Amino acid sequence: MAKTADTPLAQTLKRLMDEAGTNPKRLSREANLNETYVRDIVAGRSKSPEARRLAALARALGVDVGILLQAAEPNTGELISDPKELILLRTWRYLSEDAQTQAMNFLEFLIDGKRQARTPAVGE
Image 1 (cartoon, rainbow, N blue to C red):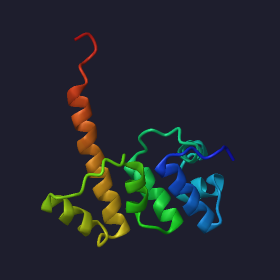
Image 2 (cartoon, rainbow, N blue to C red):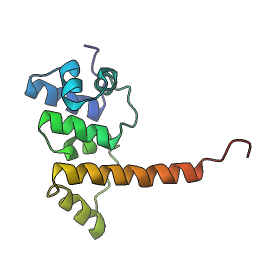
Image 3 (cartoon, rainbow, N blue to C red):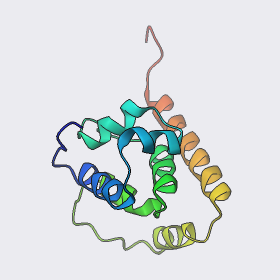
């Protein structure tokens, strides 16, 4: 296995894999992801992993997706003070796996829409 990079996500994923007694190849199969994707995270080469893929890894590892999402976010020292954001985060843990998947798909749809709106068309 490639040397683990010193990123919070790489460290967290490596620790969780060690605790689960698994490796990137086995984890990628269990999460239905490409093995290279998992290895890139462990090596610190994945700069912005997709939330739905982190959710798949978390399910395969039997942990809350929040652990990986938190590790993937840059630590700004910012505390969550918006009550609506806190409600959203607290609600997540009560959703079924299917509802979490649907919510992640919807959020990605919204994020992709914003990205496409900011990307000028070819020739502009």
